[in-house]
Length: 494
Image (cartoon, rainbow, N blue to C red):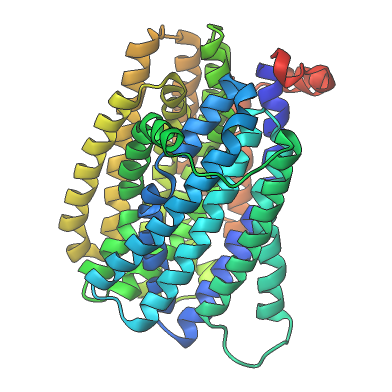
């Protein structure tokens, strides 16, 4: 199982690292740059509305995706029985979600134009949610290659579509944020269609059917997952919404926050990939009463090492990176760069959440996770209410960092108690030594008198070498995995 995790992790990381960073930093960031130049605040408005659609996702999903991934991984024979019923249930939830979303937009005073964007972005989330549902079935079946391709298809299509609009010379009109949203609709729609066909190939039958009793059973089982997703969505995505609504220059501050958030999301996708692979693997190991320690330690060392390397480098070169991508003036630069720096540090804490939160989800420890998430929501909203009026996007990013550190520590504590995890002194020593040497490396950076890009590359290389030297990354394990990749067991035998 450990070899299967690593071999498929290599594939999904390769696909995602080739496509998603270019989309986020090349396409999305370029759209932000062009739209804010011609219509300041437009991207910030879009970013805030998008955040609202994310928070409302609870009513679109109700925890079905996480429940389904765990359920199918443990009972693969249920795919044919559940696929049609859950699909129909999700259609019903999609209608309720769109109605509720529109009602929220009206209640908080959105203009007609904002309501139009909200409607289209809400529909886009419906398409994304269906794609995620199809992916949850593929992941539950441990069909990671198909899941990996589906995970990047929408971004690949968006790269093609938006590249044509940005640089194809099809129009002389300044880029409009609406074009970006409509391109998303097309890309998400095609991805959802392919996902449906891939799952249909496994189940070989599909019927639209509404079974009230079945729907109630599924919703009851998935409700704890739904509550957890809702609470976590609040402290993940409320920052942009609160910025736009609370701060006097809300749309501008939301755009400032979004500048750094683009890079944060590019890094965060690595943790999301780990979680997507680990949930079915942890679920299967727990269901079969097998030892989780080896896969837990391996994934923790890998993701924590990656997150520290990326997080510290991003924090160290925050001003240079933001200036390089957006070409903004000194005041805007410092403000956006500080927010970006806090977000990159929060990625380190979030990486721990992706490991231990996924482990606890696989175990079904939803009560403990929900209590933790509710506590996190209170901290995040309280800090945002205090910090946003004072320092705008910087305050929101700092509030996020504090919240993520507290919730990550809480999840580690809960996991240790539930699984009776023993202290692995060798791993702790490796992590402690790695952190110490990495911070020292960052502290000594000003001594390097070279162009910032060369300094950044030297820093990254040094941190990677430190990770290998301290044992977080292991050459021997990587070589062994590559040699035995083709010997991985089939999903039903792992």
